Image (cartoon, rainbow, N blue to C red; front, side, top):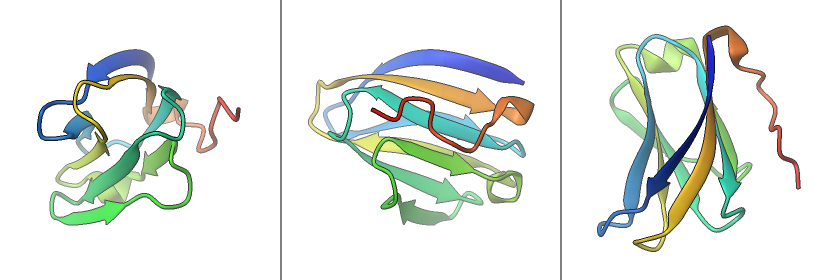
Length: 99
């Protein structure tokens, strides 16, 4: 459905929500800074899960976003994060920036 490039700054708590999905699959890929942040996902509005496979990329399946799901980044406060969000039919399931 959409591909968006976004920016966010990690707040004083060291945690920033990068994307909120409601009944729609989504991926988030960090473009900058690479390998410097920890990603986490909140599945089905309840379960918190740390992303361990790839520090720069994670996905939410449609079933994991009912009623909602989020992708969050944690790191040093003040860190500027550039990232790409894909939703709906534009979700590829694989990272675009493999460097």
